[in-house]
Image 1 (spheres, rainbow, N blue to C red):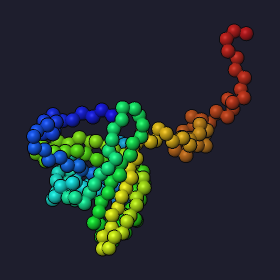
Image 2: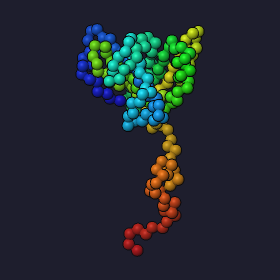
Image 3: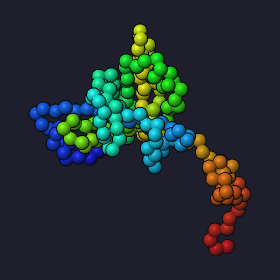
Image 4: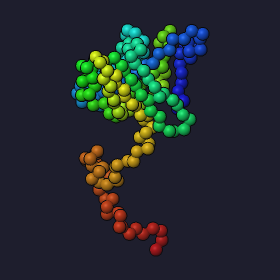
Length: 195
Protein backbone atom coordinates (compact mmCIF):
# COMPACT_ATOMS: atom_id res chain seq x y z
CA UNK A 1 0.00 0.00 0.00
CA UNK A 2 1.35 3.40 -0.96
CA UNK A 3 1.75 5.88 1.87
CA UNK A 4 2.69 9.53 1.64
CA UNK A 5 5.65 10.34 3.87
CA UNK A 6 5.74 13.95 5.10
CA UNK A 7 8.66 15.83 3.57
CA UNK A 8 10.26 16.78 6.91
CA UNK A 9 10.17 13.13 8.04
CA UNK A 10 11.63 11.95 4.72
CA UNK A 11 14.43 14.52 5.01
CA UNK A 12 15.16 13.45 8.61
CA UNK A 13 15.27 9.76 7.64
CA UNK A 14 17.86 10.43 4.91
CA UNK A 15 20.37 12.16 7.22
CA UNK A 16 23.66 10.56 8.34
CA UNK A 17 22.46 10.35 11.95
CA UNK A 18 18.92 8.99 12.37
CA UNK A 19 16.91 8.19 15.51
CA UNK A 20 13.77 6.40 14.28
CA UNK A 21 11.02 5.17 16.58
CA UNK A 22 7.77 3.27 16.37
CA UNK A 23 4.55 4.36 18.04
CA UNK A 24 1.70 1.97 18.77
CA UNK A 25 -1.95 2.94 19.23
CA UNK A 26 -4.58 0.40 20.33
CA UNK A 27 -8.20 1.58 20.36
CA UNK A 28 -10.43 -0.23 22.85
CA UNK A 29 -14.14 0.19 23.55
CA UNK A 30 -14.98 3.44 25.27
CA UNK A 31 -16.25 3.51 28.86
CA UNK A 32 -19.85 3.93 27.67
CA UNK A 33 -19.55 0.83 25.45
CA UNK A 34 -19.02 2.72 22.20
CA UNK A 35 -16.64 0.77 20.01
CA UNK A 36 -14.16 2.13 17.50
CA UNK A 37 -15.13 2.06 13.84
CA UNK A 38 -13.66 3.36 10.61
CA UNK A 39 -15.64 6.60 10.96
CA UNK A 40 -13.19 7.32 13.74
CA UNK A 41 -13.83 7.52 17.42
CA UNK A 42 -10.80 8.39 19.51
CA UNK A 43 -12.06 7.14 22.84
CA UNK A 44 -10.66 7.54 26.29
CA UNK A 45 -9.81 3.82 26.29
CA UNK A 46 -7.00 4.10 23.77
CA UNK A 47 -3.60 2.71 24.83
CA UNK A 48 -0.58 4.41 23.27
CA UNK A 49 3.12 3.46 23.53
CA UNK A 50 6.26 4.51 21.72
CA UNK A 51 9.72 2.91 21.63
CA UNK A 52 11.48 5.80 23.38
CA UNK A 53 11.53 7.11 26.94
CA UNK A 54 9.14 9.52 28.65
CA UNK A 55 5.97 11.00 27.21
CA UNK A 56 5.73 12.02 23.56
CA UNK A 57 2.96 13.90 21.75
CA UNK A 58 2.17 12.37 18.38
CA UNK A 59 -0.81 13.52 16.29
CA UNK A 60 -2.08 15.53 19.29
CA UNK A 61 -2.18 12.39 21.48
CA UNK A 62 0.15 11.46 24.37
CA UNK A 63 2.17 8.26 23.98
CA UNK A 64 3.92 6.55 26.91
CA UNK A 65 7.58 5.64 26.48
CA UNK A 66 8.24 1.90 26.71
CA UNK A 67 11.94 1.93 25.86
CA UNK A 68 13.16 -1.51 24.84
CA UNK A 69 10.12 -3.24 26.34
CA UNK A 70 8.04 -2.80 23.18
CA UNK A 71 8.90 -4.68 20.01
CA UNK A 72 7.02 -4.83 16.73
CA UNK A 73 7.68 -7.59 14.21
CA UNK A 74 6.23 -8.72 10.91
CA UNK A 75 5.77 -5.27 9.40
CA UNK A 76 5.93 -5.82 5.68
CA UNK A 77 4.21 -4.39 2.68
CA UNK A 78 3.24 -6.07 -0.56
CA UNK A 79 2.29 -4.80 -3.99
CA UNK A 80 -0.76 -7.08 -4.18
CA UNK A 81 -3.77 -7.09 -1.87
CA UNK A 82 -2.56 -9.96 0.30
CA UNK A 83 -3.30 -9.57 4.01
CA UNK A 84 -0.15 -9.30 6.10
CA UNK A 85 -0.08 -9.30 9.87
CA UNK A 86 2.17 -7.97 12.62
CA UNK A 87 3.05 -9.05 16.15
CA UNK A 88 3.23 -6.54 19.00
CA UNK A 89 5.19 -7.65 22.07
CA UNK A 90 5.36 -5.86 25.41
CA UNK A 91 7.73 -7.41 27.95
CA UNK A 92 8.43 -6.76 31.63
CA UNK A 93 4.74 -6.51 32.52
CA UNK A 94 3.57 -7.04 36.11
CA UNK A 95 0.66 -9.31 37.09
CA UNK A 96 -1.76 -6.41 37.60
CA UNK A 97 -1.43 -5.31 33.97
CA UNK A 98 -1.72 -8.93 32.80
CA UNK A 99 -5.05 -9.25 34.63
CA UNK A 100 -6.29 -6.04 32.98
CA UNK A 101 -5.21 -7.35 29.57
CA UNK A 102 -7.12 -10.59 30.14
CA UNK A 103 -10.32 -8.74 31.10
CA UNK A 104 -10.34 -6.25 28.22
CA UNK A 105 -12.31 -7.24 25.09
CA UNK A 106 -9.61 -6.71 22.49
CA UNK A 107 -10.46 -8.87 19.48
CA UNK A 108 -11.38 -6.97 16.31
CA UNK A 109 -10.36 -3.65 17.88
CA UNK A 110 -8.18 -1.32 15.81
CA UNK A 111 -4.40 -1.07 16.25
CA UNK A 112 -2.08 1.29 14.38
CA UNK A 113 1.70 1.49 14.10
CA UNK A 114 3.44 4.76 13.23
CA UNK A 115 7.05 5.43 12.21
CA UNK A 116 8.72 8.66 13.21
CA UNK A 117 12.12 10.28 13.76
CA UNK A 118 12.99 12.05 17.03
CA UNK A 119 14.08 15.32 15.45
CA UNK A 120 10.72 16.00 13.71
CA UNK A 121 7.10 15.85 14.85
CA UNK A 122 5.71 14.20 11.71
CA UNK A 123 4.91 10.47 11.56
CA UNK A 124 3.63 8.07 8.95
CA UNK A 125 1.23 5.20 9.60
CA UNK A 126 3.07 2.07 8.50
CA UNK A 127 0.48 -0.51 9.56
CA UNK A 128 -3.11 -0.69 10.74
CA UNK A 129 -5.17 -3.72 11.51
CA UNK A 130 -7.47 -5.54 13.88
CA UNK A 131 -6.26 -7.13 17.12
CA UNK A 132 -6.62 -10.89 16.92
CA UNK A 133 -4.87 -13.30 19.32
CA UNK A 134 -3.10 -12.49 22.60
CA UNK A 135 -0.59 -14.82 24.22
CA UNK A 136 0.99 -14.34 27.64
CA UNK A 137 4.24 -15.87 28.87
CA UNK A 138 5.13 -15.69 32.54
CA UNK A 139 8.77 -15.67 33.62
CA UNK A 140 9.48 -14.99 37.29
CA UNK A 141 8.09 -11.67 38.48
CA UNK A 142 7.20 -10.33 35.04
CA UNK A 143 5.32 -11.44 31.96
CA UNK A 144 5.45 -10.90 28.22
CA UNK A 145 2.29 -10.14 26.26
CA UNK A 146 2.29 -10.81 22.50
CA UNK A 147 -0.60 -9.63 20.39
CA UNK A 148 -1.09 -10.57 16.76
CA UNK A 149 -2.73 -7.93 14.61
CA UNK A 150 -4.18 -8.86 11.25
CA UNK A 151 -4.47 -6.45 8.36
CA UNK A 152 -7.90 -5.01 7.65
CA UNK A 153 -7.53 -6.59 4.20
CA UNK A 154 -8.22 -9.98 5.83
CA UNK A 155 -11.91 -9.01 5.86
CA UNK A 156 -11.87 -9.39 2.07
CA UNK A 157 -11.09 -13.09 2.53
CA UNK A 158 -14.00 -13.77 4.89
CA UNK A 159 -17.37 -14.95 3.66
CA UNK A 160 -20.21 -12.53 4.23
CA UNK A 161 -22.89 -14.03 6.45
CA UNK A 162 -25.61 -11.55 5.53
CA UNK A 163 -28.56 -12.70 3.44
CA UNK A 164 -30.68 -10.64 1.11
CA UNK A 165 -33.87 -11.37 3.00
CA UNK A 166 -36.31 -9.16 4.82
CA UNK A 167 -35.56 -10.86 8.15
CA UNK A 168 -31.80 -10.38 7.89
CA UNK A 169 -32.15 -6.80 6.68
CA UNK A 170 -34.46 -5.90 9.59
CA UNK A 171 -31.78 -6.98 12.07
CA UNK A 172 -29.80 -3.91 11.03
CA UNK A 173 -32.60 -1.59 9.86
CA UNK A 174 -35.84 -2.51 11.69
CA UNK A 175 -38.10 0.04 9.98
CA UNK A 176 -36.84 -0.49 6.40
CA UNK A 177 -39.18 -2.47 4.11
CA UNK A 178 -36.80 -2.73 1.13
CA UNK A 179 -36.66 -6.57 1.07
CA UNK A 180 -40.27 -7.25 2.14
CA UNK A 181 -41.40 -8.34 -1.36
CA UNK A 182 -38.32 -10.30 -2.46
CA UNK A 183 -39.91 -13.69 -1.63
CA UNK A 184 -42.96 -12.87 -3.79
CA UNK A 185 -40.75 -11.91 -6.72
CA UNK A 186 -38.87 -15.22 -6.69
CA UNK A 187 -41.63 -17.12 -8.57
CA UNK A 188 -43.27 -14.16 -10.29
CA UNK A 189 -43.87 -14.30 -14.02
CA UNK A 190 -42.97 -10.96 -15.59
CA UNK A 191 -43.96 -10.05 -19.15
CA UNK A 192 -41.04 -8.39 -20.91
CA UNK A 193 -41.31 -6.66 -24.26
CA UNK A 194 -44.22 -6.86 -26.72
CA UNK A 195 -46.79 -9.69 -26.56
